[in-house]
Amino acid sequence: MRRRGCQWQNALRFWGMNRRFRGMGKGRKTRRALERGGTGPAQRLNETLARWPGVRITPMFGRWGYFVGETLFACFPLREKEHDLWVRLTGDDQKRALGDTRVRPHRRFSKKGWVELDVDGVEDLGRAVRWLRRAYGAATGGSPDATAAEP
Image 1 (tube, one colour):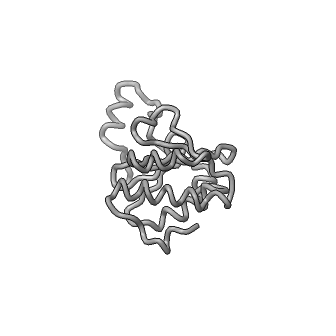
Image 2 (tube, rainbow, N blue to C red):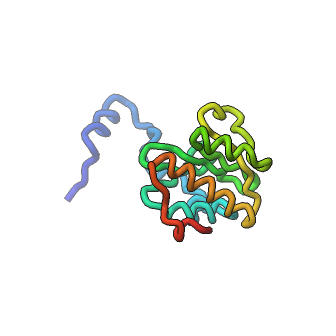
Image 3 (cartoon, helix red, strand yellow):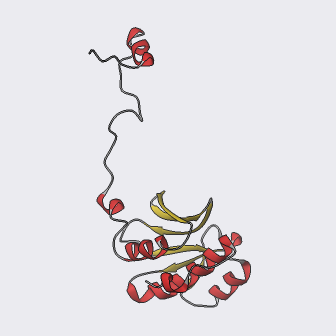
């Protein structure tokens, strides 16, 4: 049995367009760090947040994006050299967070409730997860199970 190409592929050949289009074919390989869910603190955060109900983790623009439904509530860098966690909080939580010297307003989106904090190692994960719980609660109106939230 002889196999034929798609009708539109035959039409393209007829018109002299026999080139490869973007999005067709094999494409490029996924980076190993993405397949493993990150490295270093990013991997620990991804493992923790993946257990929370309704959280979707996806790479976007050089960062891990943490979503609940369509709402982005946090971002963390893909690169192991970068350590700034971005978290979107309510107005009251943002004021409370900025009272800590280790938390600073986001450089562009501070008026929308975003703050930045550095997560350099395991010792910073507890503080990060506490603010992530608040951001998750603001995005969903609830909070994840406290036992599943610890790194």
